[in-house]
Image (tube, rainbow, N blue to C red):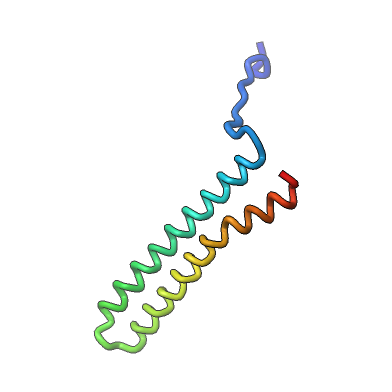
Length: 89
């Protein structure tokens, strides 16, 4: 017997829409998680800066990165809708 005789279907998604929705949820989760990490790092850097302008600038950069991450996470549904339009799902 060959392995192909006992092949099992591994696809859990029932449709392309479900796959795209899963991609959207994954993207949003990863981006929001990374943004939260940058927000936390920025907060710690700002608290520990002690008035040092260089450290304050690093904290502000981390805050800006967190903002970009949250913004991109908010745009993830739009990206998936564009992909749905492309594949006509």
